[in-house]
Every structure is written in structure tokens, then in C-alpha cells.
Image (cartoon, rainbow, N blue to C red; front, side):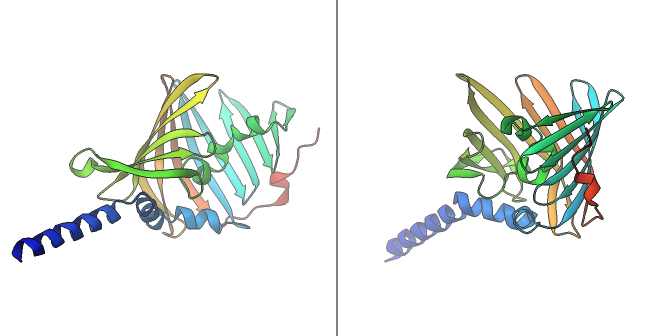
Length: 240
């Protein structure tokens, strides 16, 4: 009888452990802790002001992004002393610099602005962006031990591994492999310095480092304000 009880207890513990390590539950725990899913699902009509610095190849570029969700974005950046303003409106982008404006309607080109225009939706894993979730085990030790979830990124159809810190429940890093013209592109992303915004309802990383093809790009969030005053002129198409 004692052996039977121990056997049943072992099976029960095994079931509980497997349930705790279910890929969807790991994701759900992350979304609950960060509030990212709730923000993205309920931000229609809201606004925000993001101040960020992008560092690449020894250059530091300051960004200011004014957003009117879900589809209006104004990006102001400085590149080697030149101010570039980009207006994103639905399926068109206007890029203005030194008195000249370029109109972009190509979907692939417009998507290139996504990581800086809507950082919370496009740089940080969100519900609906991934499929074929699969828990594959643990990696790391101590405070760096993570649950590892394999999945497919719907946007890029990239094989992805996400590393969720067991202690905090937050996403520490991501690894992706994407096929581009028959070539495999590998990329690593590291998420650090989680900070609360939106009166504490939103917890997101303020330092995101992305490395691919031997090049590293750092996104450093300086400030993020929600429900800021915006005006229609901020998102109007430039006069040409």
C-alpha cells in the first residue's frame, strides 16, 4: 500500500510539473505580469509618446515617437545632424528630410519602421504573433534559469526560441532563424531593465539588444508616456 501511495504521488507531481511547464501557461504568466497583452488589445483611441535611443555601428540616433493607436505614428529622429520625420498612416508612409518628402506604399518597406513605431507590438512578443508553441525544457542556472519555448513567428515565419526567466516570469532573450533567399539568418535578442509605465499597468524592457549577421543594434527607452495630448497635424501627410 505504501508503494502504491508513493507511486500515485509521483504520478500526481509529474502531472502538476508538466502543467506548470505548459508553453501557453508560460506565455500567459508573462502577459499577466507585464500587462503587454492588455495594452495592445485595449489601446485603440489612446496615445503615447516614446523617447528612445538607437545605437548601431558606433552611431547613436535619438528617436521620438508620437502614437495615436491603432495606426497613426509620427517618428522624429536625428541622423548625423539631419532631422528625419516619418509619418505612418495605415498603408502609407511619408519620409521627410531637408525639405524633400518621399511617399512609400510598399508594404515590405513600411514594415521596416514597425520596431520603432510600435515597439510594444512589434519588438516584444505578444499574443497571436506565434504559433506551434512547444515547451522544450530548461536552460541556465540560478537566477538565469529559464523555461525554453519553441514556436514559429507568424510575421517572418521564423523558427523561434523564447527564454522565460523561471524566477521572474519575464522574457530574458529570444533566438530566431529565418530563411531569406535560401540563406539562414540567425538573430539573438536580449531584454533587460524591465520598468513600469502607464501608472504601473505596463511592465516592459527598457533595453533591447538585437544581434544578427555580426551587427548589434541597441534600443534604449528613455521615457514612455501614455495618454498624451496629440493633434491631427502631427499625423497629416506633408505638403509636397
